[in-house]
Amino acid sequence: MGSLAGIGAGLAAIGAGIGIGKIGGSATEAMARQPEFANKIQTAMLIAAALVEGVALFAVVVAMIK
Image (cartoon, rainbow, N blue to C red; front, side, top):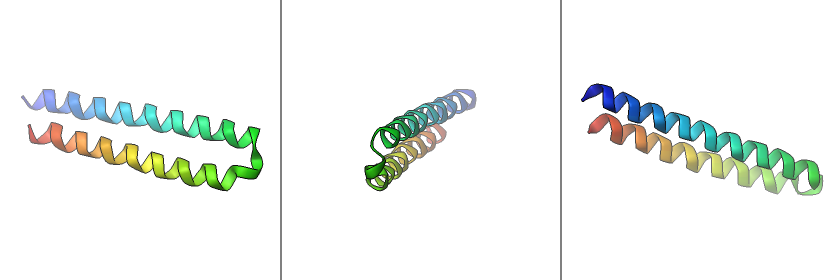
């Protein structure tokens, strides 16, 4: 059962990496299109990235508990 927990934790980490990569890429593109809103975009990007990390951490903990 331990190997399944490791696979679950790995999938959670991969999902978080993909999510944060998409957030960062989209934010960079948005800042390039409208540089005057860079501060607002960056703030929203950091909040979204923190939420993705929180969900990933929760998924890893659940995978390790089960």
